[in-house]
Image (tube, rainbow, N blue to C red; front, side):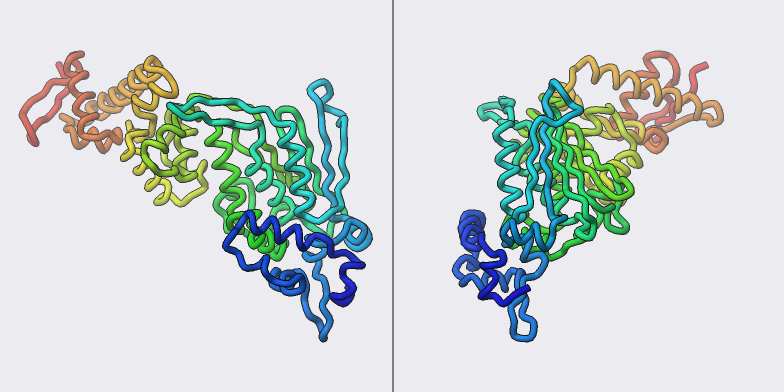
Length: 402
């Protein structure tokens, strides 16, 4: 690299553009007031070495001219491929970008946004506009690829734009210790730390390591399929989808958050989505889904129970009646209640084969019921002539009918 005074000949060309963008993203930042040299030094994009200012690799990626990037770091390329509905096998347009990172992000974001279709979802008195691919999700996905890619590899980052999905392919495997089963909760370990930190300081990301959380939250809140990560020998792909799977889920979550005057956590949203799709789930299934320790999963479930959104029945979590009314249907809720009663009745009858009687407390332990759920179940079994009651209050005992 050369002296700072020679850097503009070699590559620096977008410093003022970055300052203007930062003024918009973070009006309180003092960085835009610095002179160019101080601005770049403060971001870590130039380093002094024996009295000479040298452009770092990250500096070249952020403020280098296209000619400099092509000559000094040719693998720093993003290739955009567009596919039409008529031909999903062969792309119909292509862009090869060897430009500064922010220029690549801005150009491809504009390309995606121009092709987006919008679905309007009415929630009470306000309207949600859900795009095929939200700017926040696409930018976080692309920033993730650029921060984590292996720059020693000569492969490019590919952005494959299909009508129903975007696939982003990044050279290099996951960082050590990270896989598809812990990608949401694993502490961030960007392969290119200075790139990630610069993106954060330029306010293109809110906080280093938060990107995957944001992608999952936005996709779930929009009622879309979960993002999909796939690991290959020398690459990682991330697929994000455009289709809305469940508009009623979107409406309900938006309305409920407005009513609660709070934004639900990602684990809470994941639990609600899982129970919407699967009707019921046990703690171990939810723990695997959220990738959290069991104590944190239990806390999230307890919050949703307190909000009146889910309930515990026979050691299984399910949506409450009011949520079914909003998302599913009363018929489905009734069917699920019948199934839970059948299962609880079977457990009680099996218990009474070896025990003389059963109590409300024992049923709560056996089925994971609340006191009220146990009482309703016992009353129904009494009405069907399966059990008989002797005693009252704490002395109440339920015996198998003769």
